[in-house]
Amino acid sequence: MGRRQRLISTSILRAIFRSNPSAQDARIGLLAHILAFFSIFHLTLSRYRKELFKKLRNEIWHIEEEEYIESFRSPSKSKRTDLVAVGDLGYSGSTFFTTPDSKYLLKSLPRKFEQDFFRDRLLAPYAEHMEYSSTSLLVRITDLLYAPSSSIGTILGTTPSHHIVMEDILYGKSRCTKAKQKEWETYDLKPIDYFYPERDIAGGRLAPESVKERLIDKFPDRIRVSVDEKEELVAQLSRDTRILQDANAVDYSLFLVRYPASMTSETDGKVPVPPGTPSPWRTGVLSRDKKWIYRAILLDFFWAKDAFQAKAMTGLINSWNFLSWGKSNGPMSITTTSDEYRTRFLKMVESIVEVPDSSGRPSGEDRNLLVESSEEV
Image (cartoon, rainbow, N blue to C red; front, side):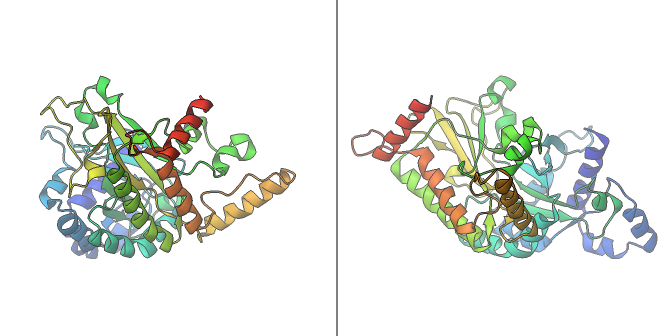
């Protein structure tokens, strides 16, 4: 871990472990504020709406508080406690860590419009929805950390001022051998019929190839489950995306994980499941052919359709289409309407889930999809 990542990790851990940050923050003097302002990487972070997130953890998701805090400690008392850096996983430039026990994933929110949207517009309906929908597939966000005061690091963008802590749907993978870890597959799925300027404009020079390759995933197979399991998945995603549509959110994705059903961990012969109240698509759904275990959650719902950046990108794409001599590249996921994005998103989910008809064969629509897939190959 580099110096920057280590200092960010230290800032996060201090915020998590402080028992009464509000009282401590009140004692910060003028000199401390001045020193904090000149910080480049090391920030003093606080937990935003601490009691709200504690209620979500303890009362809604039934995550024991002591167990949650212990997830941030090193399992070995002889070793320094540090988060585990997993690098830059996205186009936004977010920094990612996992807790030492791999139960939780931490993601920075470097862009101010994402911070403002989640904190000021989505958090309240998100918390209410989670309270009344125990099987919701919106990723469980267990903490929001933020820097109460500005610093040179946040102004220059060298250090993110906001971080979210969320469940890690890949929990259990690290318990497997390195050879078996390679058998886990992940897909970040969005409707693929949109135009992505990060990938296409200016010959694709707006982002490195390593990032563009991750920009759009395509699931090369079908999720083979029962009719009831498909109906449950689509119905739950329909309820979850309704609150995102109401908040005018777009560009979210379905994060799909699958691993061989025959896989066992080296400890107790069973791949452990993510913490908190269990739900089928979190703990794992067995495929009809008993070859795979599927997990799925909704991620990245921080882009508002009416954000300034979305409006700016609309102008960019219009200019690009004009300079392309009228050739239209289609709508962008980040500038389309929230209801259209939701419709296309749910249609995408329907298209990748295969269920049998009364004869036990794939249903008519799914048979057509399989034929089209084979023809493409």
